[in-house]
Image (cartoon, rainbow, N blue to C red; front, top):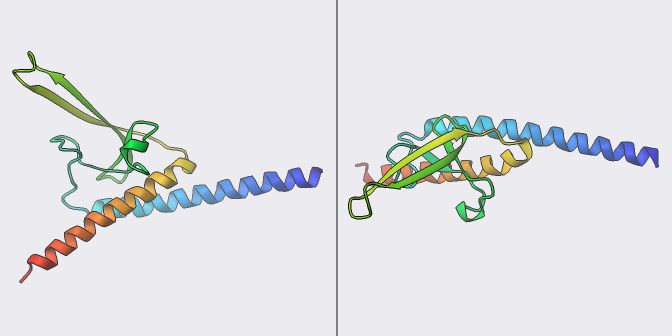
Length: 135
């Protein structure tokens, strides 16, 4: 029994080490890819925040707020505040912001992988447009 418990604990430790290593490698890839996406897109029509969605499964699956990756390759929580200015007739004011968020490695892996796929798609679209319009 003691050997089984020890072996189980060792397997958990090895698994944790693997997740941490994977998260670190994905972070390196994400930072490199984010820096190559120029110009970095604005998020959800924002005039203030440049970001790409990192949510695995999209916003409808978000369980911790809207997590995005910014041009620095880091994860941030996106917040949009909308205020009615003087009444519905006169318009609305929108204030967008991001706050850096540190995710545990086991969560970071999914977010980073999704962000990498999103940036790759944007880079692919950029390359496709460049090829299409180059003469």
